Image (cartoon, rainbow, N blue to C red):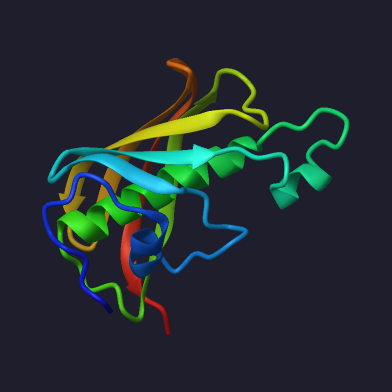
Length: 154
């Protein structure tokens, strides 16, 4: 894996793809900003009408699925953790272990910019617990607590 310069407060899409195994159309964050090692970061997702999900969810009234918001939270947390803890992610994947306290407050639609604040709640290798809050224009649209673990891809 190409090493990303340490100490950055923002990661672009190319850097995220070095940390995450996800690719379009399921790579659900565009940037990671406001990185605070050992604490938190913010994932950014620009919601576009051209996203393939809107062909079926729902063509007449496009709404970004709530489960995508949870997945975007997980991807932001995974990228944040892999980067700030300098994890060797080659041949590894990060797997969900549980999602709790998930709440969806309002729809997310094309043209919105989703800001996904994630923070580490607990860390016991190889398991982490996170809390995530997604906002659009400063208004909470979703929140959840979730756990994940680092596992071998094979």
